[in-house]
Length: 136
Image 1: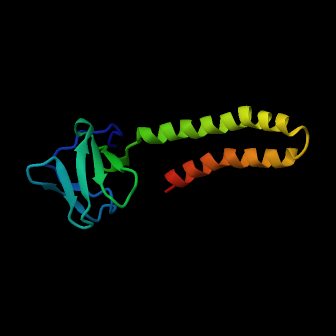
Image 2: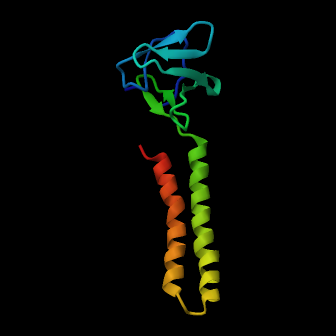
Image 3: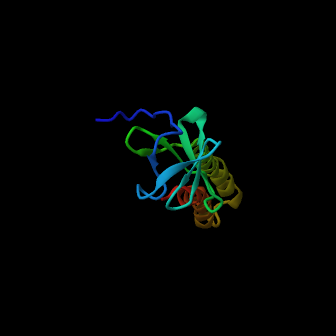
């Protein structure tokens, strides 16, 4: 059984294309640390000291990256997704802990249901944006 430890990407080795699911082969682009797929025509560069293959694409808003584990590509976790999660959770906490009590106190008992619905909507909105951004 192959190990799951990422291996350094060798520019002289033949790899399957991570984008088109093993139908295409990656071909090195001469005099660069880049690859091109012979089937889907996507371009890839080697990053992170040779351990990450990153797709160059203008149609996808976030960079897709993979690590080679010996027999297949594994999606590389990006740091930006973790920061967006912390940001979304922070916004939700601020809205529920700070804004909701202030809104309820200023309403003097009237329209409490309206203020509660608005605060829940504002709390769900960052979670929905995060989900739409990172769904597959």
